[in-house]
Length: 295
Image 1 (cartoon, helix red, strand yellow):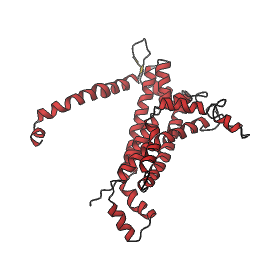
Image 2 (cartoon, helix red, strand yellow; image 1 turned 45 degrees about the horizontal axis):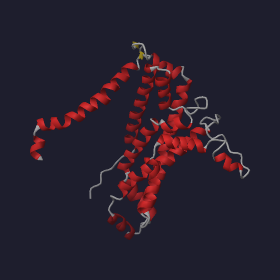
Image 3 (cartoon, one colour; image 1 turned 180 degrees about the vertical axis):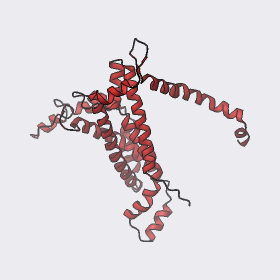
Image 4 (cartoon, one colour; image 1 turned 90 degrees about the horizontal axis):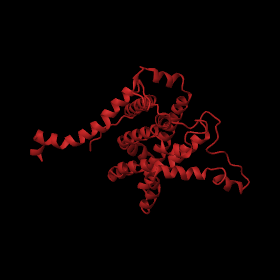
Protein backbone atom coordinates (compact mmCIF):
# COMPACT_ATOMS: atom_id res chain seq x y z
CA UNK A 1 0.00 0.00 0.00
CA UNK A 2 2.82 2.42 0.89
CA UNK A 3 4.44 1.73 -2.48
CA UNK A 4 1.19 2.61 -4.28
CA UNK A 5 0.76 5.80 -2.25
CA UNK A 6 4.26 6.92 -3.22
CA UNK A 7 3.48 6.37 -6.91
CA UNK A 8 2.08 9.71 -8.12
CA UNK A 9 1.08 8.26 -11.48
CA UNK A 10 -1.02 5.53 -9.83
CA UNK A 11 -2.70 8.13 -7.61
CA UNK A 12 -3.60 10.25 -10.65
CA UNK A 13 -5.00 7.21 -12.49
CA UNK A 14 -7.25 6.29 -9.56
CA UNK A 15 -8.43 9.85 -8.96
CA UNK A 16 -8.94 10.81 -12.64
CA UNK A 17 -12.34 9.10 -13.29
CA UNK A 18 -13.99 10.61 -10.23
CA UNK A 19 -12.40 14.00 -10.86
CA UNK A 20 -13.54 14.06 -14.50
CA UNK A 21 -17.11 13.14 -13.50
CA UNK A 22 -17.04 15.79 -10.75
CA UNK A 23 -15.93 18.49 -13.19
CA UNK A 24 -18.34 17.50 -15.98
CA UNK A 25 -21.41 16.95 -13.81
CA UNK A 26 -20.96 19.60 -11.11
CA UNK A 27 -18.28 22.24 -11.74
CA UNK A 28 -18.97 23.11 -15.40
CA UNK A 29 -22.81 23.22 -15.02
CA UNK A 30 -22.41 25.35 -11.89
CA UNK A 31 -20.35 27.97 -13.70
CA UNK A 32 -22.77 27.86 -16.64
CA UNK A 33 -25.63 28.46 -14.22
CA UNK A 34 -23.81 31.46 -12.71
CA UNK A 35 -23.25 32.91 -16.20
CA UNK A 36 -26.86 32.32 -17.27
CA UNK A 37 -28.07 34.10 -14.13
CA UNK A 38 -26.72 37.31 -15.64
CA UNK A 39 -28.48 36.66 -18.96
CA UNK A 40 -31.92 36.96 -20.48
CA UNK A 41 -32.18 33.34 -21.61
CA UNK A 42 -35.36 31.71 -22.86
CA UNK A 43 -35.88 28.27 -24.38
CA UNK A 44 -35.58 29.17 -28.07
CA UNK A 45 -33.32 32.23 -27.94
CA UNK A 46 -29.61 32.44 -27.19
CA UNK A 47 -28.56 33.97 -23.85
CA UNK A 48 -28.20 37.77 -23.83
CA UNK A 49 -26.13 39.37 -21.08
CA UNK A 50 -28.24 41.75 -18.96
CA UNK A 51 -26.08 42.15 -15.87
CA UNK A 52 -27.88 42.22 -12.52
CA UNK A 53 -31.36 42.65 -14.00
CA UNK A 54 -32.53 39.16 -12.96
CA UNK A 55 -31.43 39.72 -9.37
CA UNK A 56 -33.01 43.17 -9.25
CA UNK A 57 -36.31 41.74 -10.48
CA UNK A 58 -36.15 38.96 -7.91
CA UNK A 59 -35.55 41.14 -4.88
CA UNK A 60 -37.49 44.28 -5.84
CA UNK A 61 -40.31 43.22 -8.19
CA UNK A 62 -41.11 39.53 -7.74
CA UNK A 63 -43.53 39.09 -4.81
CA UNK A 64 -43.69 35.33 -5.37
CA UNK A 65 -39.94 35.08 -4.84
CA UNK A 66 -40.26 36.96 -1.55
CA UNK A 67 -42.92 34.50 -0.40
CA UNK A 68 -40.75 31.57 -1.51
CA UNK A 69 -37.73 32.98 0.33
CA UNK A 70 -39.76 33.53 3.51
CA UNK A 71 -41.21 30.01 3.35
CA UNK A 72 -37.80 28.43 2.74
CA UNK A 73 -36.31 30.24 5.74
CA UNK A 74 -39.27 29.22 7.92
CA UNK A 75 -39.04 25.63 6.71
CA UNK A 76 -35.28 25.52 7.38
CA UNK A 77 -35.62 26.90 10.92
CA UNK A 78 -38.59 24.67 11.78
CA UNK A 79 -36.90 21.55 10.41
CA UNK A 80 -33.55 22.33 12.04
CA UNK A 81 -35.05 22.87 15.49
CA UNK A 82 -37.65 20.10 15.57
CA UNK A 83 -35.75 17.37 13.73
CA UNK A 84 -32.54 17.91 15.68
CA UNK A 85 -34.20 17.96 19.10
CA UNK A 86 -36.61 15.08 18.48
CA UNK A 87 -34.01 13.06 16.57
CA UNK A 88 -31.48 13.40 19.40
CA UNK A 89 -34.05 12.53 22.08
CA UNK A 90 -35.19 9.46 20.14
CA UNK A 91 -31.57 8.38 19.69
CA UNK A 92 -30.89 8.69 23.43
CA UNK A 93 -34.07 6.81 24.34
CA UNK A 94 -33.50 3.98 21.86
CA UNK A 95 -29.86 3.45 22.83
CA UNK A 96 -31.05 2.86 26.41
CA UNK A 97 -33.81 0.41 25.51
CA UNK A 98 -32.56 -3.15 26.14
CA UNK A 99 -35.26 -4.92 24.08
CA UNK A 100 -37.15 -3.98 20.92
CA UNK A 101 -34.62 -1.35 19.89
CA UNK A 102 -34.41 -2.51 16.28
CA UNK A 103 -38.20 -2.60 15.92
CA UNK A 104 -38.65 1.01 17.01
CA UNK A 105 -35.59 2.09 15.04
CA UNK A 106 -37.04 0.62 11.85
CA UNK A 107 -40.45 2.17 12.53
CA UNK A 108 -39.00 5.66 12.88
CA UNK A 109 -36.59 5.26 9.97
CA UNK A 110 -39.03 3.66 7.51
CA UNK A 111 -40.55 6.95 6.18
CA UNK A 112 -37.05 8.13 5.16
CA UNK A 113 -36.67 5.35 2.60
CA UNK A 114 -40.11 5.79 1.06
CA UNK A 115 -40.67 7.93 -2.01
CA UNK A 116 -41.32 11.56 -1.10
CA UNK A 117 -43.50 11.95 -4.19
CA UNK A 118 -45.71 9.03 -3.13
CA UNK A 119 -45.87 10.29 0.46
CA UNK A 120 -46.81 13.76 -0.78
CA UNK A 121 -49.74 12.34 -2.73
CA UNK A 122 -50.75 10.20 0.26
CA UNK A 123 -50.79 13.14 2.67
CA UNK A 124 -52.54 15.36 0.12
CA UNK A 125 -55.26 12.69 0.01
CA UNK A 126 -55.48 12.56 3.81
CA UNK A 127 -55.78 16.34 4.11
CA UNK A 128 -58.36 16.62 1.35
CA UNK A 129 -61.40 18.29 2.99
CA UNK A 130 -63.86 16.03 1.17
CA UNK A 131 -62.35 12.58 1.66
CA UNK A 132 -59.63 12.91 4.27
CA UNK A 133 -59.19 13.73 7.94
CA UNK A 134 -62.02 16.28 7.89
CA UNK A 135 -64.53 13.53 7.14
CA UNK A 136 -63.36 11.66 10.23
CA UNK A 137 -63.61 14.83 12.34
CA UNK A 138 -67.10 15.51 10.97
CA UNK A 139 -68.33 12.25 12.54
CA UNK A 140 -67.52 13.76 15.93
CA UNK A 141 -69.16 17.06 15.06
CA UNK A 142 -65.87 18.87 14.47
CA UNK A 143 -65.42 21.09 11.44
CA UNK A 144 -61.87 20.66 10.24
CA UNK A 145 -59.86 23.50 8.68
CA UNK A 146 -58.80 23.77 5.05
CA UNK A 147 -55.48 22.07 5.72
CA UNK A 148 -53.94 22.67 2.29
CA UNK A 149 -56.04 25.58 1.03
CA UNK A 150 -56.04 28.15 3.84
CA UNK A 151 -54.26 31.33 2.70
CA UNK A 152 -54.44 33.41 5.89
CA UNK A 153 -51.54 34.37 8.13
CA UNK A 154 -47.89 35.27 7.80
CA UNK A 155 -47.02 31.57 7.58
CA UNK A 156 -50.10 29.89 6.12
CA UNK A 157 -51.57 26.68 7.56
CA UNK A 158 -50.58 24.53 4.52
CA UNK A 159 -46.94 25.45 5.14
CA UNK A 160 -47.20 24.26 8.75
CA UNK A 161 -48.84 21.03 7.56
CA UNK A 162 -46.03 20.38 5.06
CA UNK A 163 -43.42 21.13 7.74
CA UNK A 164 -44.98 18.57 10.12
CA UNK A 165 -45.14 15.96 7.35
CA UNK A 166 -41.45 16.56 6.61
CA UNK A 167 -40.70 16.22 10.33
CA UNK A 168 -42.49 12.86 10.38
CA UNK A 169 -40.60 11.69 7.30
CA UNK A 170 -37.05 12.80 8.09
CA UNK A 171 -36.72 12.72 11.88
CA UNK A 172 -35.60 9.09 11.60
CA UNK A 173 -32.59 10.13 9.54
CA UNK A 174 -31.33 12.44 12.30
CA UNK A 175 -32.10 9.76 14.87
CA UNK A 176 -29.91 7.23 13.04
CA UNK A 177 -27.01 9.68 12.76
CA UNK A 178 -27.12 10.44 16.48
CA UNK A 179 -27.50 6.76 17.39
CA UNK A 180 -24.35 5.98 15.42
CA UNK A 181 -22.47 8.66 17.37
CA UNK A 182 -23.88 7.74 20.78
CA UNK A 183 -23.17 4.02 20.42
CA UNK A 184 -19.53 4.95 19.78
CA UNK A 185 -19.23 6.53 23.23
CA UNK A 186 -17.58 4.16 25.71
CA UNK A 187 -19.94 2.81 28.37
CA UNK A 188 -17.10 3.12 30.87
CA UNK A 189 -17.44 6.92 30.71
CA UNK A 190 -21.09 6.71 31.75
CA UNK A 191 -20.40 4.12 34.43
CA UNK A 192 -17.69 6.31 35.93
CA UNK A 193 -20.06 9.28 36.01
CA UNK A 194 -22.77 7.22 37.73
CA UNK A 195 -20.25 6.05 40.34
CA UNK A 196 -19.39 9.71 41.00
CA UNK A 197 -23.07 10.42 41.66
CA UNK A 198 -24.18 11.89 38.33
CA UNK A 199 -27.79 11.40 37.29
CA UNK A 200 -28.80 10.35 33.80
CA UNK A 201 -29.82 13.94 33.02
CA UNK A 202 -26.37 15.24 34.02
CA UNK A 203 -24.68 12.42 32.10
CA UNK A 204 -26.65 13.49 29.03
CA UNK A 205 -25.73 17.14 29.51
CA UNK A 206 -22.05 16.78 30.34
CA UNK A 207 -21.12 13.60 28.43
CA UNK A 208 -23.54 12.87 25.59
CA UNK A 209 -24.07 16.41 24.31
CA UNK A 210 -20.36 17.38 24.09
CA UNK A 211 -19.43 14.07 22.44
CA UNK A 212 -22.19 14.24 19.79
CA UNK A 213 -21.28 17.76 18.68
CA UNK A 214 -19.28 16.55 15.65
CA UNK A 215 -22.34 14.63 14.44
CA UNK A 216 -24.53 17.61 15.34
CA UNK A 217 -22.58 19.77 12.87
CA UNK A 218 -23.00 17.15 10.13
CA UNK A 219 -26.67 16.47 10.88
CA UNK A 220 -27.61 20.14 11.18
CA UNK A 221 -25.77 21.05 7.97
CA UNK A 222 -27.52 18.27 6.03
CA UNK A 223 -30.82 19.26 7.65
CA UNK A 224 -30.54 22.94 6.70
CA UNK A 225 -29.31 22.32 3.15
CA UNK A 226 -32.01 19.70 2.55
CA UNK A 227 -34.67 22.08 3.87
CA UNK A 228 -33.56 24.91 1.60
CA UNK A 229 -33.63 22.58 -1.42
CA UNK A 230 -36.94 21.01 -0.41
CA UNK A 231 -39.23 20.38 -3.38
CA UNK A 232 -41.10 17.08 -3.69
CA UNK A 233 -43.51 17.21 -0.73
CA UNK A 234 -44.44 20.84 -1.45
CA UNK A 235 -45.00 20.18 -5.14
CA UNK A 236 -47.09 17.06 -4.63
CA UNK A 237 -49.17 18.40 -1.75
CA UNK A 238 -49.93 21.97 -2.88
CA UNK A 239 -47.91 22.73 -6.07
CA UNK A 240 -47.11 26.08 -4.45
CA UNK A 241 -50.77 27.05 -3.91
CA UNK A 242 -53.08 28.48 -2.86
CA UNK A 243 -52.17 31.65 -4.75
CA UNK A 244 -48.41 30.88 -4.46
CA UNK A 245 -48.58 31.05 -0.64
CA UNK A 246 -46.66 27.77 -0.19
CA UNK A 247 -43.99 28.41 -2.79
CA UNK A 248 -40.41 27.67 -1.70
CA UNK A 249 -37.21 28.46 -3.57
CA UNK A 250 -37.09 25.04 -5.26
CA UNK A 251 -40.69 25.17 -6.52
CA UNK A 252 -40.23 28.77 -7.69
CA UNK A 253 -37.07 27.70 -9.52
CA UNK A 254 -38.92 24.80 -11.15
CA UNK A 255 -41.83 26.99 -12.23
CA UNK A 256 -39.64 29.69 -13.76
CA UNK A 257 -37.38 27.23 -15.53
CA UNK A 258 -39.74 24.48 -16.70
CA UNK A 259 -43.16 26.14 -16.81
CA UNK A 260 -42.21 29.58 -18.12
CA UNK A 261 -38.86 28.61 -19.75
CA UNK A 262 -37.09 31.59 -18.18
CA UNK A 263 -33.76 29.85 -17.79
CA UNK A 264 -31.79 32.97 -16.92
CA UNK A 265 -34.26 33.93 -14.21
CA UNK A 266 -34.32 30.39 -12.85
CA UNK A 267 -30.51 30.34 -12.84
CA UNK A 268 -30.51 33.48 -10.67
CA UNK A 269 -32.75 31.67 -8.16
CA UNK A 270 -30.34 28.72 -8.28
CA UNK A 271 -27.38 30.98 -7.48
CA UNK A 272 -29.24 32.51 -4.53
CA UNK A 273 -30.11 29.01 -3.30
CA UNK A 274 -26.46 27.95 -3.64
CA UNK A 275 -25.26 31.00 -1.71
CA UNK A 276 -27.80 30.36 1.05
CA UNK A 277 -26.64 26.74 1.39
CA UNK A 278 -23.00 27.82 1.65
CA UNK A 279 -23.76 30.55 4.18
CA UNK A 280 -25.84 28.24 6.35
CA UNK A 281 -23.12 25.58 6.33
CA UNK A 282 -20.49 28.12 7.37
CA UNK A 283 -22.80 29.52 10.05
CA UNK A 284 -23.44 26.08 11.54
CA UNK A 285 -19.72 25.34 11.71
CA UNK A 286 -19.06 28.74 13.26
CA UNK A 287 -21.82 28.52 15.88
CA UNK A 288 -21.27 24.90 17.01
CA UNK A 289 -17.76 24.65 18.38
CA UNK A 290 -16.38 21.10 18.33
CA UNK A 291 -13.81 20.27 20.98
CA UNK A 292 -11.21 17.56 20.54
CA UNK A 293 -11.17 14.94 23.27
CA UNK A 294 -8.27 12.59 23.76
CA UNK A 295 -8.72 9.38 25.67
